[in-house]
Length: 93
Image: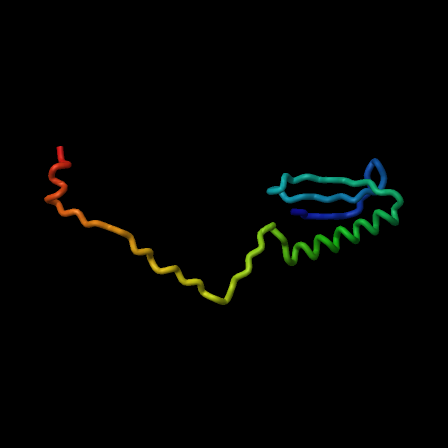
């Protein structure tokens, strides 16, 4: 996540500077863009995109809750045989 996106003067001239959160590595990234007018356009576009993303982020998972409740299918009839304790005596050591 970004914490700041500004235009600053640097030793290389005007640059678009982005700062990330501590959980994102606490990076400061600088991008020099010439001419200055293009730098302003890129800054405005990036700011707009970030604002839109912040309102409704996309985490790569789409989930749509349906209004219908899905019921579980009935349990399958299994062929089960109940064994009495008397039949189990010959298995004991």
